[in-house]
Figure 1 (tube, rainbow, N blue to C red):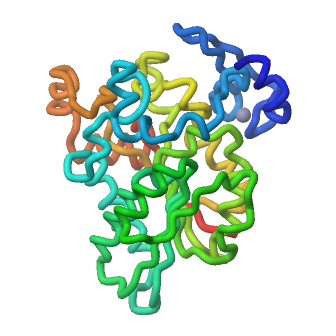
Figure 2: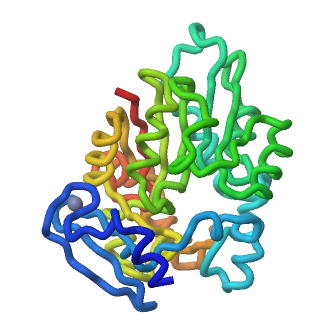
Length: 314
Ligand SMILES: [Zn+2]
């Protein structure tokens, strides 16, 4: 893997920060021997390119359907409950994101909302969107995924909607340009080998003034600080880039987007990958998770584990 990557990710091998170009970089190794580069200026943490693995070989059906999760004892991949829309706890988040998206548009004016979900997995977010139109008369959904089998499952879940089986970084031809009103990128950015290129491509796919809604782990969160490399979202080699409010702002501005909203999710004390909390998580939640702490930690301090960003194409 090491030798293959030496040539492959040459452009990412830089002594400066990937995002802000600062020379204040620190190299750190986690307990499993994965080397990370941490920026003292914008706080970006990224996996060293030596450890990168091709997305095409990673994000196949076993990653999404629970097989990899059970084979690696919960270390990698999605648990089975994630692959079932009726049981995944993400469904509630999806509905919140949809409310957020709908609030961006004048629903009297918009005839057909064109939505693209980048890294759509089995299409559950788009399916939730189709089932919760919130007054929008028509929604046209499209998805992008890497693996043919995963794309086929997504199409089946979405009544044969367009799901592009493509790596947007290298193939620019088939996804329409200047087309989408809203592009979503939910828990995807942290998996990419070169997020700048994908964000640029997505800016080209969005209409002028079109929106991007993304969710990604927050490296500046309370949990990231508290747990270090035991943080549930510290997950090399799958997670390659860990952004925070500072670094994501810089990267979005470099790629043709401007931030219109940024907040974090109420997951301060939640560190269980399965989504099933331990007694410690439940106790902490009972004590601290209330409206006051929610507003303060997520809307003011931005220290929740998941960062949500809404950006508009410049
Ligand atoms: Zn930096």
